[in-house]
Length: 413
Image (cartoon, rainbow, N blue to C red; front, side, top):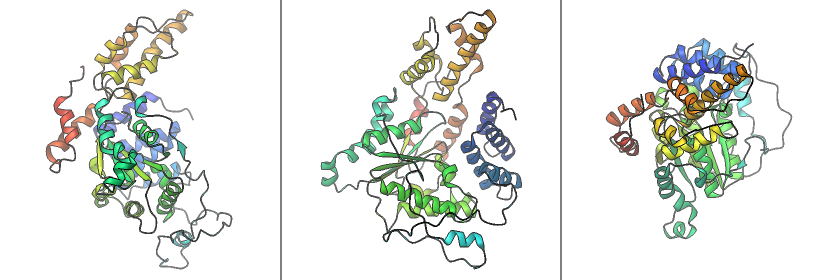
């Protein structure tokens, strides 16, 4: 099967951002993503549809396909794993009730003890980037340093003020603006290991397995502490329980259980999460001791845009490119938009070179044409955010977003 045109996927993403409640559009996008091989992004969109319409047969079939199962409802659990060593003595007991029906194989499978961890269960890495590697965005880095990093890095201050070596931070903002890169930089600043997960790593079609995956995730983080656990698109995992299916409500409850574990200490485990829709995150996840601090990550500022454009043109033939001018003309572009802009300009020069048989460098004329085709993708998100600030900011949760909206320059038309 021929993979779908990336431009079609980009257009569908824009359509879904403009109409987030249109389940037909979202499922069409999910199917395109599956055909292109992007299983993780597809699962996120399918899970969103299932939260909006739990009875959607098409969504269930797509989810089964995304997770590698047959589209029909399974009649039996997957083959049993080889016998594992018994769990360690200090391992918490399984967090699942006894099966209501002893002959129910799915519930019986959820009752089995957790196997020992292996390093590749949830791969842990060493973050090699620091905040100095994040181009521009100085106000964001300053707030991150003051609100999160400084107390964590200073042992004397922690002792003086009885500050626990744990914490949670929610990064939010438009898609494609560097939240994941910032999370890696935080891990590098703390000298901690980095453990990144998304909905595709947690969600499972078998009853109870999603909760078990979360349990294993936090066991892995505690084993390798100090460790930063990064939950990408946390609104898909920790969606408001009032708007979620029963299965997803159980996942949120398990996440809260791990964060407040009475059996295990989370000292040295830092929870970072990223979302494009903070208003969809369950309020219980934002209480003290959990994701109790938030940081707005706006579209890249002019210095950051210039750096991203330079990176996009690196190792490509260029002539007469004024990066500073391009940075001024791309207000409101996300990092992903800027990368796409460079690719579009390069494609134009490549096609000319193919026709002439001689390599022609990328010029400002190529960018002038590309700027007519590539538009900033953050506009729809910022308009939604403006409504949230106007009607849902009584507790001041979005004050930094409100300040940005008041002061932001208008993007070029």
